[in-house]
Length: 246
Image (cartoon, rainbow, N blue to C red; front, side, top):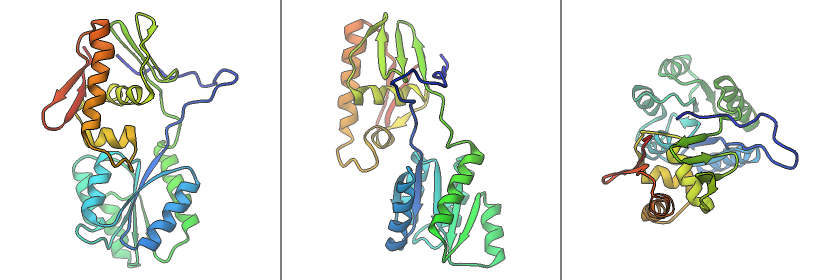
């Protein structure tokens, strides 16, 4: 099973599928955080805010494409967050944001694996331009490959936003499809309920994690039970779910 890219040129009357790039803004000054958020969202980014280091680390570990980290965060500071993320193998781009202007601080930040270092006061427009430049260099703002997963009799077609069994549309609802797609895009990887909620329902969703369980049950009923397919989603006890290649 491997991803198959959608055609580069969509047919007439259709829209190309695009993934929205997410940015973490970790800043304890709410006025600065809201200003940066406003400008990033105006440029089409999805923004998550964190006001302390522990929240920033949790968010950065889950599901963002780039992190803007204030060095002076309460709890874990930006340097320590960058150090932990790189030690754990996370390769998301990091921009350090600080009032410090010493060359030593800049060098330390870059040696910890940060991609850029912006000193306060700063131009928000310049910061957004730097974010775009970093993402371009890392190729994370390019249209990503879209999945066409074939698993026995089942086919998951991201471009068509459809799941077919024996060539027949299985009739999944949008949220059910998005959940299955997120799992299928990470075969063999255990995904927490928290991450699935963020990815499928959005960062601002205030519902219970059991929402994921309900939708997984519906997927199993609509696909495994109705079509007598082998199990393709495995429950990871006290954590979440994992997509099985078969």
